[in-house]
Structures are given as structure tokens and as C-alpha cells.
Image (cartoon, rainbow, N blue to C red; front, side, top):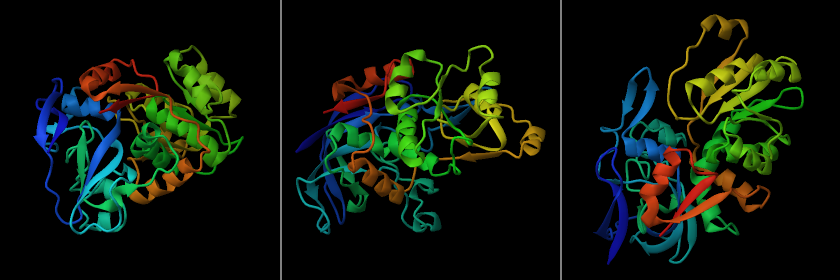
Length: 351
């Protein structure tokens, strides 16, 4: 039997459709017939072959990611075949897949933080991912029940949902006097907005320069919407929050978004950096000291985080992610639309 894969064969070029043999399963491996795969902005960076570090510097992915490679890490599907040692799952069961797999041997993995492993095996990056009809998952522990959710919604929790949840877990206590600000209303930002309403019982300030996305942010549960390019907006924000927000989460990751977030913090505020869009921003050490600020990075989330998040999602308390549905055949077109900023919410590929 064979499978379809749309894979990256050359950095900076469109994906190439291939017909390949299905993998022969060993040990604890599980074959998934993919039903839905979300397209993430990091897939655009991986297609380009680098992440922008600002000032002309780049993080080259040529060594970390061997090509050809099938991209896609927001994956949900059905168990199609089992390795000889698999007992935990059955044929025909439906799961969303935790893609941030580590080596399973180092102290980081043993501590349950596989997503931070120094020898990562992440699906769609270091192993083939979800822009395909089938996928081999190395162990059933990475398969998570999504219950009554629609498959197209469930797959988004593997990255946009998990990334937002991991960042929000780093937020200190917030209330009306200790405001939370979310920067960006793309796929991850929208996940952050809807989770913030559930986790903290408040409507966060949302910074989004593309006003065409404001309606989606409001539907997700945003409070005041802020255009960072509007004259006097930072001064107005500082006044309305009595000195600034307690926590800012940057789901964009440009020089401009980072600078705006830091500038909006009150004394003892925290900046949580998530986005990978690219660029570099100047940090003034004296201001970090005088305002007693904290700056913390957040990279997706752990397998346990994924289980906790899916328990919340299965309960039905979260608004649905706004979706655009396209066929797998249009994967290169979707990546280009995402690169140009033409995707609202999340785009899901269906095989």
C-alpha cells in the first residue's frame, strides 16, 4: 500500500507531491490515517529554511531539519495500523497527536519536558509530519483523545492551543488591577484569548495592527482592542491601567511587537515571549532594573500540558477556533497565503 505526501525538497520552494510506500511498523509504532492538519506560521519559516534573528542574522534550519521532509505538526486522525507491541490503542480510534517528541533518554525528557529536548524528534520538523495521508507515530503515549470535538478543531490544539496554554501557565495572578495583554490575533493569539477567559475569568487587552482581525478577537473573548500604530495609544493604555499591564504575552515575535509589550508593562511586570516572526529589539538594562521587569520565553508545552489542555477542550467551555478548510493539494498555496498574512484564524488541510 502507498501514501500521499506533500514534502519540502528544497528550501524556499513549493512543496512536492509524492507517492510513497507506507512505513513498516516496529515495536510500539502506530500508523495514523490523517484526517486534518493545521498550517502554522512556523511551517512558513521551515519552508524558507531559516528564522529571522534581525540585523541580517538568520537561524539556519539546514542542519537541524534534513530534507526531503514532510511539514505539518497540528495533526489529528484515525489509527490505521499497530506495531506488534502496541496494546494501549485499537484500530479505528481517533486521536490528536502530540508532536513535540524528544529523545526519551535525556534528563530533560525524563523530567517531562520533551519539547525542550536537545535531540528533538518533533513531527513535521525532525520527523515527517502531517501534510500527508498517513503518519507514523513512535509510541501511543503521544495519542490523545479529543472526545466530542470536531477533528478540524482538535488538531489545532497540538500547537496553537498548546503554545498559548504553555504561555498562559507562566502568567502570574491577574485581576482587574493587574491587567493581561495579548499581542497578536492570529491562530495562536486567538487560542490565548479564549483560554485567558477560561483560566483567569477576564477579557485581556489585545494588540493587533490588522483591524480585519478585530472581529475574530472579539468573538474569542477579547476586551479592549489596541492598534499599536495609533498615535498616543501607549500613553492611553498606561493611563487606563494605572501604570501598565501586569503581564504581556507576545504571540507575534517582531521587534515592534516585543518593544510595544515591554513598554506597556507596569513596574514588576512580566513579558512572555512566544512568537517567532523574526527581528531584533534593543533592550535597555537600566529600565529592566528600575522597573523590576521579568522577561521569559515560552516554547509550546509539555505532553502533560497537552493532556490538561485537551481535558479543558473536551469539556466544551472554549469558543471554537475560526477555521479555513482547504485540500492537501493546496498546501503550497496555503503556505504562501499565510506568508502574505491572508489567513484569518487557522487553515486546516484535509486529505
